[in-house]
Length: 401
Image 1 (tube, rainbow, N blue to C red):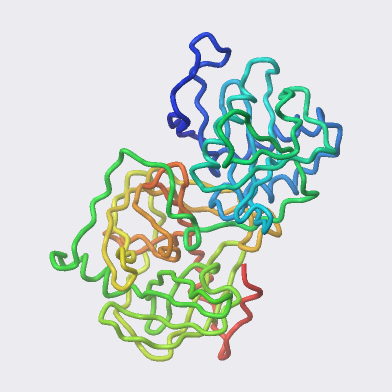
Image 2: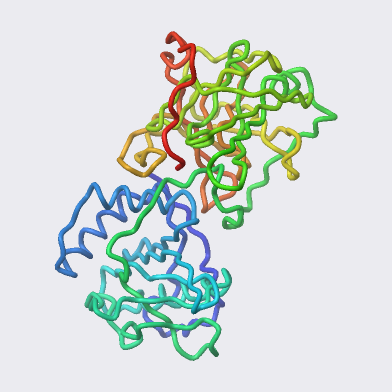
């Protein structure tokens, strides 16, 4: 697995003589899952409480593909991490956070303190009112410092102290946060992605747009969930399962603006795949690529424009084929997803899009990176999803994720 290294975002006022000067603190991504679980194991031994690998995999996975519930900061050398989870408080007047865990493999090197400084600066940027720790739970020796033992740190106070918190909550409730509901404010990337205007597309580009629909799902709260679907047979559309899970009403909108209702006729929460049947024919049928794509293959992805009311095309290149260990869409269990990683500009609302290659479409986008705005993951579409007999009635899509 490869790791991205971004410059720390906290103001650059380190003392060059301070231990750990120059340490890179970065946002943890799904590639860091194994390393985080290994460090969490060491944390549990140090903190003298049981280690549950399955629980750790599920919990960390839910924090690595979105930040609706929290954020994980990581240091590669020396190994260290901090987990911050969000809450809401009337007393605080809004958003607050809990420092759920903080661990440094080499005590006394100043890494724990640098992590704390970093997450506090990040909390201020996010508008947090305060960060808590559990005053009844001792801090691990590896990161122990006097400032870690305060029960609360108010971020609107003058910047004299640093906040702290370690595990106020008994458990972290997480779900896999996917591209359709990921936070749009990810770290900056220097890599540019070309957006192709609808007015200047060629024949292959037009075919990609014609075979793509926007998916609207209602029934999980007041907001309509948005996603992308690809027409693979007449009236049959492939999309991501988390886009339609728990929905009570579905609509698809083609390139020309034709709107029709749709039913879910296949639903796989483990692989995050769903098959929709439109109430009437829409768009044009895309050819499904018969072979698996490989690293270096170039294609395009039809995504929503900035206003969300139309489709546009972005370039996509496979950087590598992968098997990603993550959770099902509900965060209930660990699963493996075969597919590929792409260099493409994927934004919230683009989940479910397929990559259009010269030989046909392949892979369904299910998550994007929070470390780089031009990285996303697509899961392979198994042949049996398209070849199996389809039910006459809609299938159950489970609860809202």
